Length: 393
Image 1: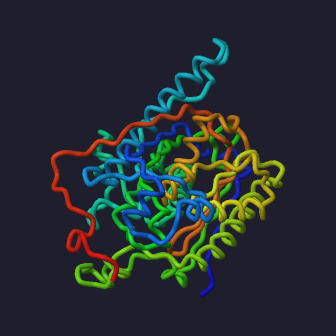
Image 2: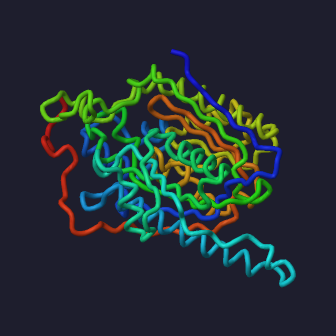
């Protein structure tokens, strides 16, 4: 099967551009180190092996009281706070003569996209519930499933809707609770994934502004659908109870995924850089999907991105799937790792198989974080509760 891909370049006409004007994050409070992962899963490995092979030292895990929707709601609320405070800060920095021409205050969100692999339930989507909890009214809201490419897929979708004039202020959220689908006894995946969420608010603006999305590229290859998968739980295999363990949990063919991820992330990034007219030396900030430090280094090396320009937080958060890129950006903004307006490349690869890349100008925002709070009351169900204590089979 030939993979399909599609690129979009910056229009030369003064069409509106989607501008990132708010950035928020939310993480569960529990920090889990490698030693605990090894002990709980009875894994035949070591802290040194995990750190050396993946770059991961610890990750966050949400307990049974917190859902993906809880994480998403907190991150989205933080992004809205960020947008409001960033607009106020920008306005106060303007001189009286220029104040009226300063960045506009963020509009009320008119769309909510939630990128997730771990929705609260198969039906309905989690996004409408998040929009309701935020008090956003009857705006359109839907989930988007592209696994680890999910945030960039959602960002590209929101960007296209802004440019088409369909939306003025889409809210893009990426939230994951991978601890519900990870097999603690699987040496290949147990140490990789963490839980968390991040969100961005976009508004219509111009391509010259900090935060402006400039070029996009995305693609897929369903021929690799079994390389990253949870086989049970869908229409083709709806009942997880009683099935072999491999059918019920997240599985990944690590060696094949590594090669495909490096190639597709590199090629997709090259395409958007070419569309934007950038050379490697022009790129001041590079954020790849935080899957594995060796993958990130391999992609950046092939793109000839200097190590100082590579931004990430995989050591502290692990792989948070769809949420990994905006969470890495949130940490980088908080640490002032890039200047507002800096040429930036984002690239990701995930199950499907899917991949995507975006060029943008680094946003001029203050990042905000909020702790997740459980929505109450609601029935709590343990992950895969039909066999919660089963051992490897």
